[in-house]
Amino acid sequence: MTLWTGTTQSADIVGSGAILQGLDKVTARVTTIQAPNNDPVQFGTLEIITRACRKHPPEETPESAAYLDIHDIKPGEPAQRVFQGWMFASSPALSALEHSVYDIWVLDCDTGIIPNHDNTSSSAIVPGKRAE
Image (cartoon, rainbow, N blue to C red; front, side, top):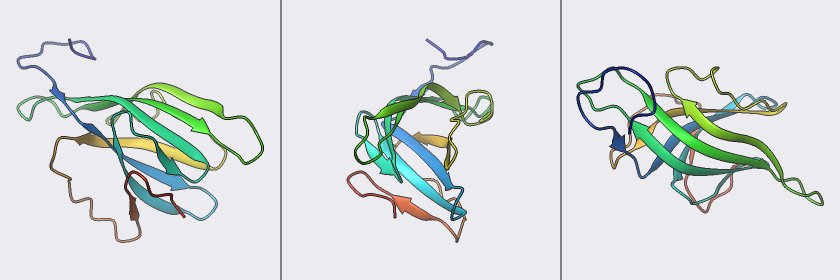
C-alpha cells in the first residue's frame, strides 16, 4: 500500500519512527525530535505520538510521511488534540499543525540511520526527555 498516488516500482520503506523538527515561536528555538512509533515524546506543552512513518525507496522521488497524534497538555487542563493525521516532508503546509506557540514538521523516517541536519542552533529530543 502506498500513501500517495503515482507509479511505484518498489514498496515503501517502513520506518521505526519519525524524525521531526519543532519550532518554539516564542524563543525561536528549533529542535530536532526523534519520535519512535507509539512512544510519546514531549516538545514544550505538546505530546507527540508517531503512529506510522513511510518513505519512498532511494531510487524514487524523495518523500516521507508520518501519521501523528499531537496533544497540547497544559497543567490543570484536560489534554486537547491539536493534530491527528498524515504530515508530508515535501509539503509541510499540506497538512500542518496549527498552534499559536509551536510548529512541527516531518524531516524523515527513522530507518536506523539518523541524517546529519547541519543546524548548529538546534538541540535534539529523544524519547523520555522533555524539551526545555
